[in-house]
Image (cartoon, rainbow, N blue to C red):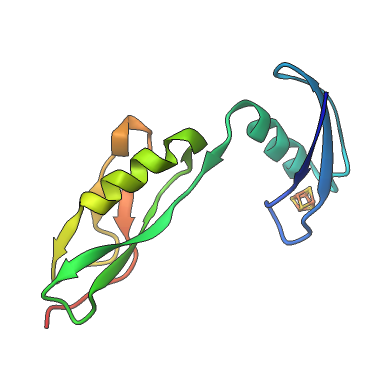
Length: 120
Ligand code: SF4
C-alpha cells in the first residue's frame, strides 16, 4: 500500500509518499531530509499530537490563561486530554510555567501554563 503525507516538521512541507505493508515501511520518497522519514514512520506507527489551549481564570486581569502540553500525546487521546483541560478552573494570580497536570492521564506529558495572569 502507499500513503501520501505532507511533512509538517519544517516550513518546506515536503509531499512524502510511503510504501508499506502493515507497519513495515518499504520505501519513503519525496522527503528532503531524514526528519521527514522519521515523521512519516511515526505517523504510520504511533501518530502523536500536542495541544495548545486555554483555561478559565477567576479574579484575573484576563479571563483565560493559555496552556500547552510539554510533549505530544497519542492522537487518539487528544479528545480525552481536552476533556481534562476543560475541567480546570484557575484562581488568579496564575504564573507561566506552573504545572497544572503532571503526567496527564498517564501519557508522559505535563500540562503547563504559558501565560501569566495577574489578579485584578
Ligand atoms: S522532509 Fe525535511 S525538509 Fe521536507 S518538510 Fe520534512 S523536515 Fe522539512
